[in-house]
Amino acid sequence: MKRGSKAPVVQNLDRKSLTESINEAENAPLKFNPEERAALIRSTIDKIRELKISGADDQQIFTEFSQFAEQYPRIFKCILAGEDTTTLLSMLALMDKMSTGSITQHQASVIVGKELANKYIKPIIQ
Image 1 (tube, rainbow, N blue to C red):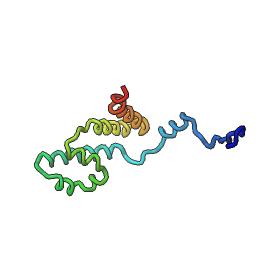
Image 2: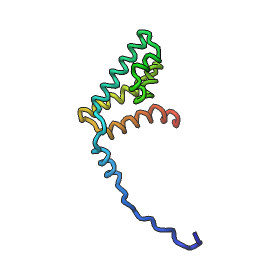
Image 3: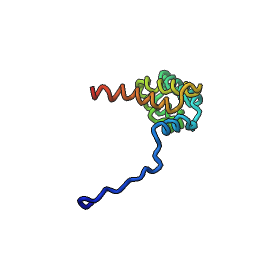
Image 4: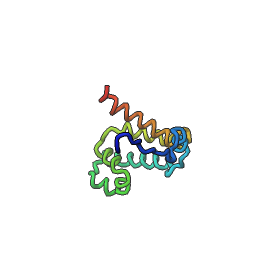
């Protein structure tokens, strides 16, 4: 750009206000049934844990729950490894609230984001 010339004017192209964006997110239809999904995940977790306790190896468990393992690989690996499921259980509780209509998917997302920030980001920056 030459000295003294003005910067090009950028037009405000279809920008939404924060309020409009939040309203849109709050009212977006769900693409899944939270009650059914939470129930499926909980029951599968219980079955995997029962198999682990009974002595089944990871390959046997994978064979029995291959569809779940492919659909939810991180959850599957977490359960097999015996990792902490506190965050997962918190998310499932939020899905329960979504299924009763007491919170929206957007509200649940904000809650999870805040919990993760408090757990992983705030300790680093303090």
